[in-house]
Length: 326
Image (cartoon, helix red, strand yellow):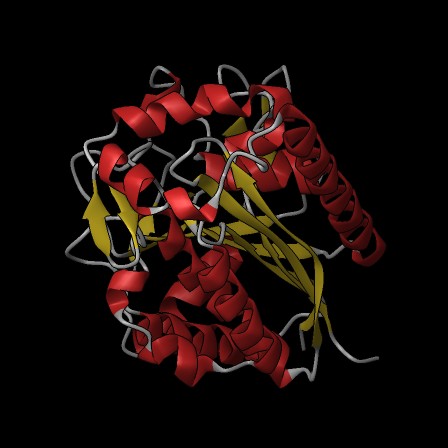
């Protein structure tokens, strides 16, 4: 039978590909957005900055502090690369999402790629891709096996036969950034056969709930355990904690529930908590379901709140992995 040897949950923010000195440049995008999501509701940038003025973001926005936090993120990614290389799975299942990169005229709730090849490279930003076109092997046999298993367990998945053009990169058919980050930054483009799973956490009305994400994880675990193969498997979630507004209190609540495998607490949180970037927490849960069954203890490599405006916009960068007991 197949053996799960590693679980990971990794942020894929573009801030991780830029020196801390430049983070304030990204803040202008936040100022220009029609609204920002914070504490379960929409705010204009001006409203949010006024609301959070007492939190004092002057210190974390200093160039010295941005450099320090950027260095901590770099060190955490280095550690995750080391852990991944140490376990070097035969196969990876990567759970990410699309952000209107390839799904423009339709928006599946959960899609699974069953094609043979995955493409990455320019003009994707350097943090997400190497400076030349690369091709990775997918795993259509495993992908088809997964779809059939999910179908038998009450999940109707979209079968993604070919990778659509990526509108973020001028319709070049490269992977969405959630997957490119894992291939480029963690796997260093030495990518094993893998199955990308895309869960729509971002866009209403067909977002899977947290409870649905938990059930998805249970089926995924059972299906991998039943796979008649001698392959070792890593399950990797590509997504961040609170963003595009960083909320340290909320992030520490998440981390506490992750450590305790407290799925009920995660499911009982108001679904409006899981909106915009923070919705990516739902991607972590299938990894956690699998790792709990293997009696794996969570390793928090680091938690680094990274800010880019006086309103506290930015991202809570959490770097996690789980390794089963020997």
